Image: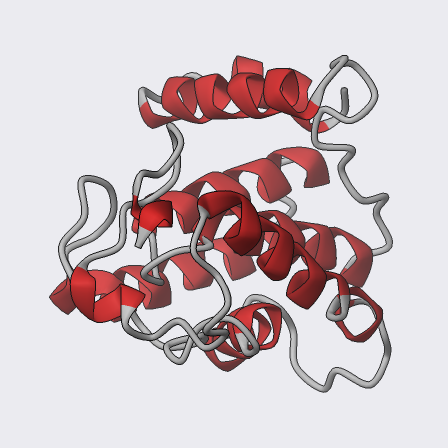
Length: 195
């Protein structure tokens, strides 16, 4: 399939994962991106509603969110990644890494260890870094982070929409800020989230 040639920052899919594509009419990355965006847009109302019974820092909710975001696109939506990638926890450590990390987040919130923006951008970065799913981790982490913010009465992040002239520029800055955060420097990410 043509869309296997991913843009920078997108996780390449292995053949088993691409075989999980639900719509048969998709043959290019552009078609796939458009289809996924439509699928994701349907989730926003649910994501911010009071009908959700669990917090986003609970593992079942993180998996349900991914499933709802990609359920019309991928058969593996909401299922843990079993393939190795150039980023992320090894597949056999994903759940343990997630459990320990979410306990940290719970503690940060309870004890007000950081201001809430810092809790949220660290939450976002670590979700991307663990890389729970075969694909869609960045989009999932951004929506999960905004859900975390709204759950605690905070304003959602703008994710570069206010400062960058194009989606491509915003995306490049986003990827640069994540790479910096990988080194322990969150300054670019801190600026990006509210720009």
